[in-house]
Length: 342
Image (cartoon, rainbow, N blue to C red; front, top):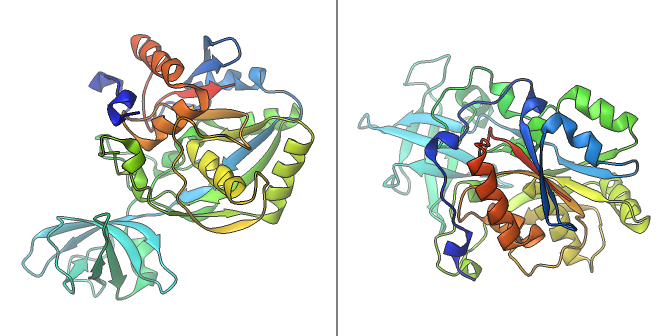
């Protein structure tokens, strides 16, 4: 297994630059693993593939205004991306440019105040992954100072920042959205509930690995960054009941998969309440213990996310589906179309 095994070619114009309206009008590529078949639908048709008793597991994380603009004392521009807050209130961040020194302080600008505001950031520590630990003079001002970060491959500004949030986003903490959930509307969720499809919510705050490609030739040498996750006692009970009763557990997004499978991996295949760091890296050969079906977007080549999807459905099957989607001009990545893997 090599990282280049998870590469595919994608025309740049298939990278979605803006979301479609309404949310559930995106396209849906359905993979039936039992028949090795591929079907093409609209996302609003997803209810036709779900049945009474199915359990949807959603990630209810909410994207925070994690991108901050600052200046060094020399006047040079600096960009800071908040990733994860430690228990002592210091943030792990990506800082550009990377030559900011230990102990250096930069001034954060806010929409309401010009550069020169008292809010300052100080670099405390450089981590092995290339990120920094940064403290802020007044953390209460961070939400007002920041803006919602979009991935670097999206070049068009977003008219409505809420379109980079799921309609059920609740728990603040992510640097990126759980994009598979962006296709759901309140109306679609109501229709699924009326059909007898059950839902539960877990939380995984998406951080550094969304922005880190797998660079090692052998993906098994890749070090997965930790992200904070929570599974409540209620969610653990609901998921356990579904498994015990033979009902399908369908994760919405790879982040939900990583969290529930990490919990099961640590508990002999069983679901338990959980709160802590998650670093599970799912590669082909992984034995899934909880997830029976998956709703996901189309992921970047050589990313840990496409590797997870290949682990779930098979390498050749997924790469074939990606090639077919590209030939039919599906829209890819964050604001792109979706897959349902049964």
